[in-house]
Length: 93
Image 1 (cartoon, rainbow, N blue to C red):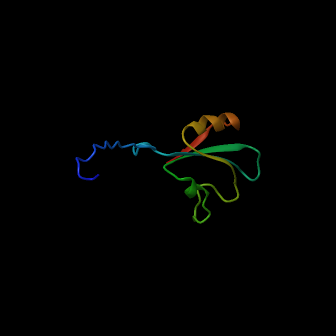
Image 2: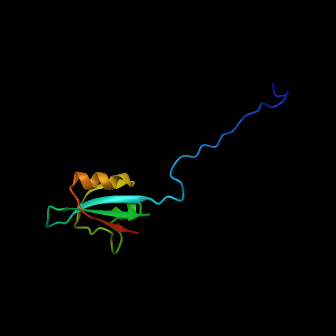
Image 3: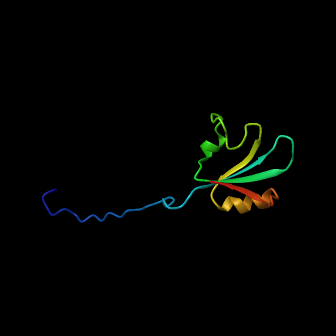
């Protein structure tokens, strides 16, 4: 044991996750305090934490708005448009 030829171990590299070239899309459905209408904003390259933080001087979504749903990925755009009957979206970089 240990004196012979070393065993041939094959190492394979497994890469998981999002490729670096793809941009993160975060979808947010919110309501204004005075109405019942839902709005959909999509943010490109923003984390969920930066959207819901209350420490920014100018937050992406004002503090008095009610955030109904948040999703990360392009598939949430169609899902939220159908679920909340939203006709137009706002895209922010």
